[in-house]
Length: 254
Length: 313
Image 1 (cartoon, each protein chain N blue to C red):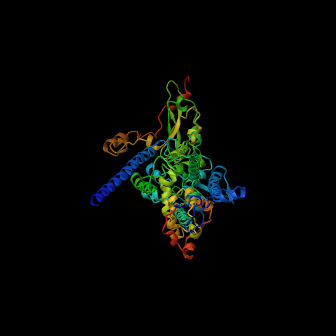
Image 2: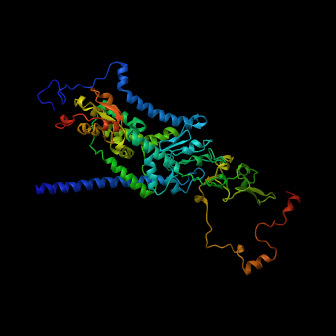
Image 3: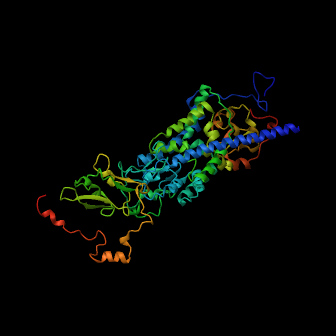
């Protein structure tokens, strides 16, 4: 009787061990799958108001009510093979960009707050940041394209056109410049770009945006005796003062 | 069980045991299939409402009919509904979701707390159609189980879901759930999510009977716990039962049909019963019926003494 009790006790512990091992190994595989999924694609462009990725991943219940609410069929839920964290809403700007509805119906539809309800002005959305491939941008070839500038819904703030000297010619180039303090990442520029593959693209800001950091100081912005002396003469403190001699276009041959 | 009598088996009170015979008439068949047809209409109808709203822009009085999916949805743009298990996982990641989804989860929790937790499984869940097909096929093909697995393993998966949600900061089951994958891709566009569903189908067909829904699914486990005190239950009228065992043969959760416990309680009390109604329509003695728990409890209990000396078939 005593030995029988011992064996069954040993059996009991063995069974507990087996169960624990099964749960632990299953749990580890599961954990691995989750980690893989979460980092599936850092390139996903999210609907307006989407919180930072870890926060967004935690909150999004994958219900697709934002997709339902979008009047332009911009948004889609990631399928199992999309390479984007499964079930989460995203959009591909080159196909259908975000048209920046003023009432932001997708954010209103979100039941969990994965899209932050505090976003009440669509201009404050930061879905991504447009970046320009200047090797393929038509404007940078000296053509007068500027389509992105003209299509931009935050015109003259998110994209401005700057003039840029051109080699071997008197004519300046008029090139687009994106300003991160105003670009919402809607992707209308990317969709409008006439090159075969878009030369202006929207990407998550954290993938493309650098940071100067605190260890650099732009000397001319700091008020010291030296900079005061330096600025005293012409008062040229930056690019605000027009450069001289631009009227040469009207003189001599082209 | 019936030693000494080879030709006609008899039940506990000496009445002959009759097998279930499928009626030959169409209306008779419809009667047997009535809950099955209702369940399929419900499952497909819900899918259709979601699909029509997102694809067809269905509206009633200018309001979208049913937006979202089974994870979280809104009826007529007014009534929020949400999967309480998904919301629980989100809350375990350390995020308090908006009031809307909390109310939706509370509503669904209340509904299934009354209707029987796992009614969700049999009447709403789209994977149920897949696993029922697998179960039907394996019965046809006579496929036996590869191994036995405890049906309680689903509660371990349930606990794992909660622990992993806590550890990883994402709703652990929602990220791998074949239910959500199937449902989402049916409504919002198909990808390779059907592979997960195929996996469930093959597992159920070749490896283990009711393998997914009856052994592994943590959502089913969650609803089994939710439905522990559910109102809608299958009533068990002891005097007419002959222990023929037909109910246990069709039941996807046969452990709930412990007839001794059922006789004592007057009903199938286990939360694991999904209220699918198969046992009700197959019972040749008309012993089983849907009823409300408190009506069963307040009704006079029949004499159950004759059940105490023998086990269910």
